[in-house]
Amino acid sequence: MRTWSYTVSCIKIIIYKHHNQIDRSIDLAQFVVDVHVDPATTTMSVSLDIRLKRANKVYHEGEVLAGVVVLALKEAVQHQGISLTMEGVVNLQLSSKSVGVFEAFYNSVKPIQLINCNIEVAKAGKVPGGKTEIPFEFPLNTKNNKVLYETYHGVFVNIQYTLRCDMKRSLLAKDLSKTCEFMVHCQAQKAKLTPTPVDFTITPDTLHNVRERSSLPKFVIRGHLDATNCVISQPLTGEIVVENSQVPIKSIELQLVRVETCGCAEGYARDATEIQNIQIAEGDICHGLSIPIYMVFPRLFTCPTLETTNFKVEFEVNVVIVLHDDHLITENFPLKLCRV
Image 1 (spheres, rainbow, N blue to C red):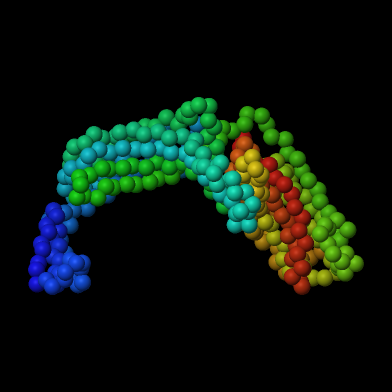
Image 2 (tube, rainbow, N blue to C red):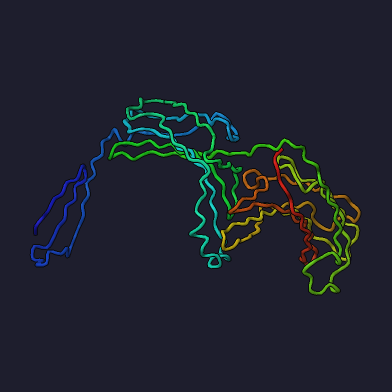
């Protein structure tokens, strides 16, 4: 039996082959790998982190993104350079029901880059052992008249801003990378927002999409929303009153819905998905009792109402009354969110 021995760096591979194999193909191959690791490398711990000066990580266009890159080492480490990359991207996608309907969408709409900057925070060299903090500053300015949309985490539209720190190391050492997300808020509008209160009455006659209206029980539910053009940092408020109902009511709920529209010249796909659902009353509510409506708009999952060439982000609220037999009565209200 012949034996070939190959040594690459610190890895030794031994291959055994049958000596009587004419076509020299491997009939039986056994790989034995001996990795010789320096004990000093195994005990060495390298920690890389990004810390922003603002605890809430919220910034506006034109401000300076400042912080420190933190390196925690047990002993000195050689590196080939440390860099920081700031990126803002809008990612769009179609829902599964729209796949195939808009085939051109995948070719025409790529991730929309809002901002991309790169700086070198440390040149190639050696970082001493212990804790090292390297300060950095990034001006949050766009190029080519692009707009920084507000951070938003949706289902089919996602607007995200990240900082990534990369520490390049030698060939045998693994490069280190750390990513940190920060939030961008759009500039507040200076004009004072005028509330637009909405009164509503729900009866069998006001319902839509009803097949057999005659089979519906009799009920009268009144209420109002204090505003439908809402300040995103303030709660949605109002009240609802069950004046009378022939059947017991099981629950009253508030459902906040995102309506995301994205597409291209070929067409647009519009999808509505639930953000949150809050129960404001349970059981058969006393008739004539005023029930307060109070909903806080969740951070990240809501943003000021947005409309661009390639996508739109809108919001609605549904007042949902669940009857005792699990029939649903829904009243829909479009909302316009803004920041003041």
